[in-house]
Length: 354
Image (tube, rainbow, N blue to C red):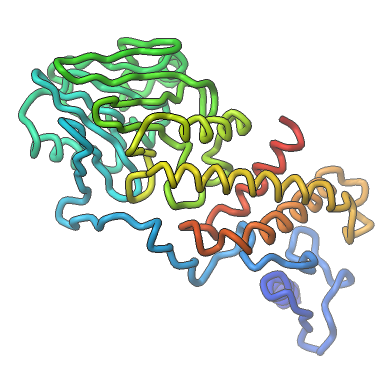
């Protein structure tokens, strides 16, 4: 019987219908098992909640797609201007800049670091003399230790990134040899990179990297061109700061945006679209917080369980937020159904406590 109840409860959760057991009786609280799925929330969103496996995700809109990857190479290289190149496997993105005496590498994702070495070798035989870290996270710079370090490259990052890497003592992410607090101008030969810090958005130390001649801006884990932002707003430590950085990026003098993720370069229109989505997300979560009763339909036996009350309330708030966003954004953003619940949860919590 427990297995039958579990399957029927899941049926109700997924389909929003009344289910019956083998004897034809309608299931309900009288048959509920603690910790097992029960009756669905009212007005179940069209997009399945976290923890429910989808048989098929929504198709990715054409506008979110980038050029295909050569399967033999495993990544592609895109020229961004004189001596500046993006390397991507259509999931992660990094850059390198060639100047008269060497190469500056900007981030080194471990997922394709060997291919990054190959991509540089296809362009130049000059040595790597500098490495720039966008921030401390291993998925973006964890391949740095596998680059050609034979010429003892200068490693540049923000002060906060250096602190985090000294704490982590990870040999795959060598500690920066040069760090800065506000701004740093890297001038090598005839090439220039302007590095700047705009506060804790994604994480402390996450910097803006601007190539003025090439009109290219690299900011990682803040804008996701054509796509739903990664879960929990890219695990931002400071959500109001993260939101303000998206707006700040829109004001920067760039034509090409390297975002660290997804399958193509970003444009100013992509940033404007994310500003619009962020505003809609904030409004939807805010309205849901105001209009959703704190207690509604929960088992009376759980009234003394504070966490149960919060869990039930925030799930209903997130569900209303998801429903509101689905009407407008379902077909506009790649991966809408992957992280919309995560992002509604993140925004509602930020509005409650930040």
